Amino acid sequence: MMVLDGKIASAAVKQELLEQTQMITQSGNRAPHLVAILVGTNGASETYVASKVKNCEEIGFQSTLVRFENTVAESILLDSIHAFNNDPNVDGILVQLPLPKHISEQKIIEAIDPSKDVDGFHPSSAGKLVQGLPSFIPATPFGIMLMLEYFDIPTKGKHAVVIGRSNIVGRPMSILLSSNIPRGNCTVTICHSHTPNLKEICLQADILIAALGKPEFVKADMVKDGAVVIDVGITRVDDPTAKKGFRIKGDVAYAEVAPKTSAITPVPGGVGLMTIAGLLKNTLQAYKMRIG
Ligand code: NAD
Image 1 (cartoon, rainbow, N blue to C red):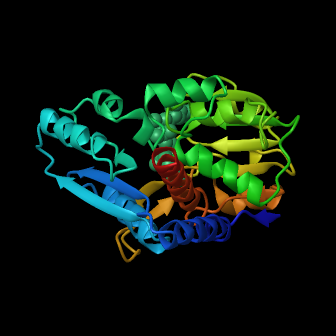
Image 2: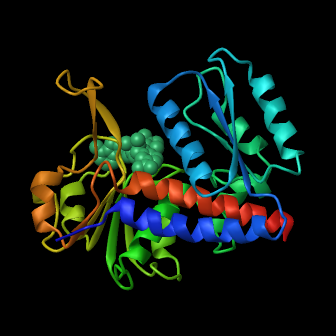
């Protein structure tokens, strides 16, 4: 069984991005610039955004973190996005989700200029992805594709089962794996909360992607011997014995599932790190489209 270590694969992607950024700045151009917008003080969101900013710094990107109170009006947020859309020194804009209930996430996503949509959530990016046109791929599925590439996991002709159909993970993941691209060409089954025979379908998977957000949901009796298992789930589970009072759990019961697999991602240290790698790659792509 091979552990698909996100630290190793993301370090390789980041090294490549660092070298490209150094070449850009050494030739007198400005560095790629990512703006991250954070609303409120949700602990998980704070951690994700801090990590994105830190990773930008590590590879020489410029980053700006803009914070708003939880009570911010939707119109203020939209004004801020419009200002960054019009700023020629900004290449990528991300708004950390989830947003407070009084703000329409869809409106916010659609306000971002598609050429700066480095999270790949804009309907224009999603439509292009479906049609196989160049686009920003949502960072998590993009990161998983980079991971499959890095560890040379064969996908052609395999049966991939994706649990979860969200716009940010499950659905784009299923599109990528079924596309005629490197690390694609799978036959894909997408499962969701109304799938009655989930276990039966999971047992047919050569590649199983768990993205449902239910800690340790995938048990050993749902996984075929030798399958590749990609665990996207990140849930904070209360644990008074842990230093922070919680532990991060994936969607896969790792201890019992791992011995059955040919390859598996750990949580933490797997897909989460690749998500950041995907975001950084999208930001460089946005920069190159802007600067040429
Ligand atoms: P979501 O809540 O938007 O979607 C969950 C999906 O799972 C839904 O489509 C739902 O139909 C399906 N589902 C729920 N219960 C199910 C069940 N019992 N059986 C089958 N399907 C079921 O979640 P999301 O935003 O796609 O995120 C999923 C998980 O991935 C969460 O734990 C989230 O924190 C994590 N996540 C991790 C990363 C990362 O970088 N590792 C990035 C994004 C999301």
